[in-house]
Amino acid sequence: MIYILRGHVMVPLNVLSTKLKDFNIDNLDKEDIDLNRKPSETIDELDIVLYSVNKMKGNLIHDIERIERDRQEKEELIVKLNQSQKMEALGRLSGGIAHDFNNILHLISGSAEQSLHYLEANKLDKIKKYLGNIVEFSERGDKLIRQILTYTHQKKVEYSKINLVNVVRTSLDMMRSTLPANIEIDYTFDQEVDILGDITQMQQIIMNFCTNSRDSIDKKNGYIKVRTQVNHIKNEVQLIISDNGSGIPDEVKEKIYEPYFSTKPINKGTGMGLSIIHSIIEQMNGRIELISEIGEGAKFIIFLPVYSEGEDLLANELNPTQRLGEITLKGRRVLILDDEEIIANMHKDFVEEQGAEVLCYTSPLAALAALKTGLEVDVILTDLSMPEMSGFEFAKAYSESGGEKPIILLTGHEEKVLSENDISSYNIEEVLLKPINMEELLEVISSI
Image (cartoon, rainbow, N blue to C red; front, side):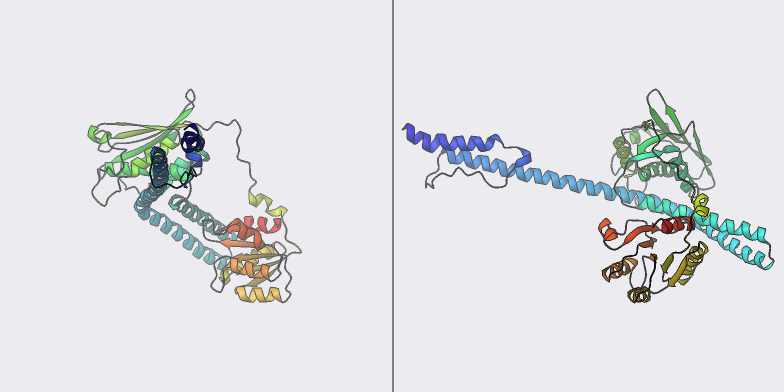
């Protein structure tokens, strides 16, 4: 009896105990536990225990997979809602952005016309002045485009050391053109301060609050005041945004950060703005307070930790114009490829001024044919988007045919367009975003 009991009960129970000993979430095996018992037509208590254990294990695996799936879906939903809220705000900004661009284009075209006029009159001082205007307003347009791209891109949040004062300034610059004439906006700060955060998220916070203030003020004369002040004792900075709008009633205050809660009419908001803002602030280890009374406006106070690291990690960079006189391309042969002849010739003139010999092409196929038949160059500068073949396809064809000279790609796409493997495989040394300052371009060419 002891032998039978040992062989049919004790040994299988010992095997089951051993397998369950290491049973945890990290090493769940989808295969059922098998005690290697001889097949039997009857079901005993041990079979029932084994069935229950395997059923429990299967249910646990299923629940874990469902929880993980739900978590991923929730993260994807948050990203989509975040992007939707940003696009909603951008839609409201579009009128002001168009206004800014029209001003920029007006000043550029007017300055160009004036330059041509004074060129005929040979007034060099006037020509210099208006050409300087063209450069200045081109840079301003470039800055506006980059702000919009930074704000609208769906990208992974990247926390880094950022200057809060600069972020507030640039965000309010974008907001100013969207505000009606009856609303004034003012910003004051007690000192420069750094925080650990994401620039796009901080822009989103400021623009969301200002947009809500604008809607609250409506058509009466009003103001939006933004202030940052540092509390050294608590090592935190307060970002205070206040207005003299209609105020927020108590019953709304209780729900204001809830997802999909909105006091605005249908199709005038997603109801996700303040919910997302509240989530962002919590992720930054901050908090938010609201002070408001009906008819007396609203004040939001955002408390954020001050970035504290003792040393400034940002290296001081030399202005490229200061280095221009130190750089020369004398003795180098540069192939310039761009399907836009005006752009190709502009790059050609500039590079030639620095002493290089330039070979200019507007056809990738013609440039590739010349290189394959023995054209010798030291570096290749090519546009990325061209009708015959892209700059990347050109680089690939060139390198696969035995070409070894370094290639610089110019692109107007702000997002990352090539993988690191693509870049390293086909002689691509640099990928530069247009518009690029000519001095910066010269510096890159000379460094290769």
